[in-house]
Image (cartoon, one colour):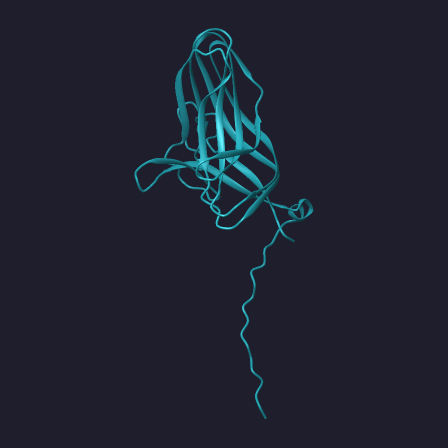
Length: 219
């Protein structure tokens, strides 16, 4: 009697989602902002789904602004690695971070942080969604620190293979009373180390900047 032929089969990976993922049709992934040196010795601003020790604990800029126009005085752009498979974003993204503004001159000035989710193809960045905090008004020679949560609405957006998800953070300035010498600091350490003005070890700020991104899932 002939013996039956047996074939070995390989089990397929099974993705697991919680009830809210299934109800919303999205799977949320948390990315952390930080910095690291690359192969050329340049310090890159990066996003990672894993926590790591960031080379810099904060991104900090100082400078004078004389324009009377509203402007993004400081810009920080954190990039994820290129997508290896197509991914689709849709839903609400949530950014949490701390920021510190300081106005070192007299006069009335406004400041606010704004965050963008962008699709970057290596040459052009296209904004998918954005959100901002209310304007803080400085009356001169003062400073303000705040823990923020921003909700960014993302329309259904396809990221192709090779495209990059970018988190763009700007420190925006509204000049209403002459030139301003100012400082802006935002955290970028997944392990919550101390910066210059943001010092989690001694106050209630954080240097952890993280963004929760909703990806569409196939059920």
